[in-house]
Length: 299
Length: 299
Image (tube, rainbow over all chains, first blue to last red):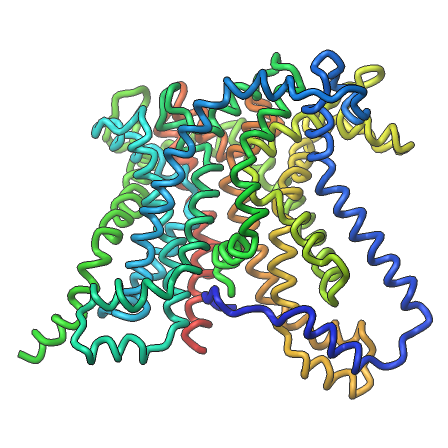
């Protein structure tokens, strides 16, 4: 149990290798157990991929061929027609979400880096009390701030456009980004900071020239986490934006959520709306994982 | 002079984090307090009212039939969702623990739904949880029929049973059991090999090594998984909203809060629900944060 992010798990290859050497004679059941293990792994993979399978089968069929009852039938024709139909509907939401998620994750990560640095390496009296108070903000049910937040945003004219939404995502992202950077900076040696102090550098200098240059991994974790959560957010988006500024989740729910929309369009829209976060996951899965672990306050 | 020098050493740090602290102070703690205040007023409609009606909103809420259904629904959902995700996640971690071929592939497949928004997840699963029968059988039911498992057919969240909401635990578990797996896997792999080896040398077979060496060390992981899943289950809104908005069989307090506040303007009731949600979440989260911070300090 720890709030550290950077402790690497022991490499699986290494432990597997030592086990081969140390294992006592295998029981006669071992081959069956291994086979059973792979069958179970494969069956579970099928369960997790089944919705994707249905999604792709449907979205790639010729719209004329689509019907909910034939969801599982292989397409007799290949067509990108469905995507061509839904993309114009989603494009605006897609752009809005980009305009929202990128600044939200950049600003939130930068502030998180400052907070994390101060809370681990440039501590002030009471820092130990402040940190758990910050953390609590990560877990609150947002329903419990929604009414006051809406009032404030309305009276400051921040309802409707993306500015207010970005602000909200930056602020509610601060707990996790602070946590990520605090854990990361806790892991770098105090001597590095001390040496900088001895050289006469002040806090800002130390932060920008000593701490930040070693922090790209923490930035990756924090940016990915923030990007994913602001891309996937629905509650704030639906409350704070008007139609032309709908983020992708709100657009998706309004387009694909109706009962009247054809099934294939619904599926294709869901797929398109998930492409950026899925890409991030596939390309940068390692950092995504670390964010997940940090989110559970675990190393 | 001495005090001044001390302030000069930590002052800049405090200054650097103060914007974040101020923002969180307002957007988390001030808003939470404000929301609690609203729950003691008779605010109805778009015009805020800040009178004092004592606990009237809470009394009305507990007598409110929809809220009673919501609480029961949430209890059923939480039970099935946490139980199912824990079992599945633990089982997957157990399968992967020793290191199997293509481990990275399986792990990524089990975890990828974490990257998808609840809205997209809901839209996909709404089609899979189709309850059409006879010639219009579709979704999972159709898949069951194709596989000769027709007896598994279900009306899912549209059944009249009080367990209807349990059907939503399938998409929720699909989305989050990979996360549980990742937590358990990290926990299992952090058990030092020497400990296991010592037990093996003492003559323990593999199941006993697991039971007596690994299992006790997994208790903290188990607790974090329960806490994370419990707080998600209490505050989740968008998944239910995207699957079947307005279906009272899958209504929960988080949804009721939304529908009663931001439509008809029963802000007083919405605030009371949100306050109850806040305290329920705080009940599991505060000890969790306290415990995490304490075990971090002990290291």
